[in-house]
Length: 356
View 1 (cartoon, rainbow, N blue to C red):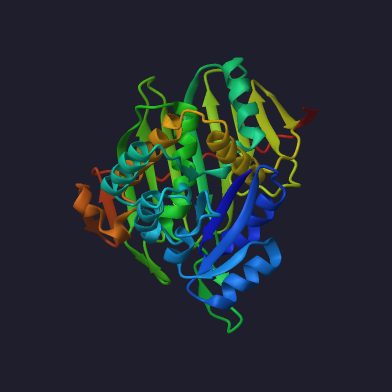
View 2: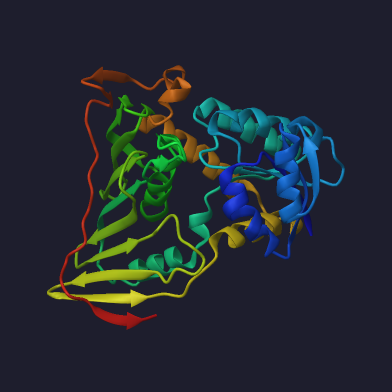
């Protein structure tokens, strides 16, 4: 069993990850750290473990083999480096780093110490995406020509009637970016991207990107944090089209539905529910406990950090230091001289329902 300490009492930790870890027999939460003692105690009362005041003190504990790190993105690199230096494996929320140099430094340290550094892209471990991959490989829609994805979340209404963001643009943009790499493979290049410089509730509320793959296929991505909710992707092939909603924020009980268009026909393929948070906790634990090769996980961290830099969503962390070229025009930050915010829409035709 892998003994995990939690650095920070973020919403995603209490709402999704720790309840899922409690259902994963390969892991045990042994400690939870917060700068506020009462918050750490509230988490351990629910999920077990010892409450710890201060992140550094948790890293000193001998009953912690690995840490789960759900702190804000700007703290990911700092505390990952400290955890690795303390000899702990790390499962870090996405995006791991807003600067490629930070990701490279952490990956080098993880390799040097023989430790696992893994980015918590839980959606990748939902079985619905593996099913989509198999359908593509079987030629259901022919040769993939275009991948389109959008992820937008609405403002959160506070008890005093004000609104605030539930997330940051780098966190939200991470999902479509990683999904594009999942289906188009390595070697993606950014043909154009834009980030809106500011909105009513803070900096960088929206962005988009156009990417190209070595195969000639393209990806059109859009993301935002002051938007009506959208979470899906669309794959357009030479002989058909496939659409998946609730692709990224999928409740455990949700029944995924694939919308497939071929010729004049439309069908729905219903899939089984799955628990991707529980799954990723198991993948992380098995990699450590079974002594697996950590290279695919660490390489994925570097690849995604490169993507984040190239599309400009790390602007809040002064990504200019990493060499990104920005031109601010009319409230938008243009990266690479073009805008790439597009959305692919499913056909409204009446579907035929098919169970998986």
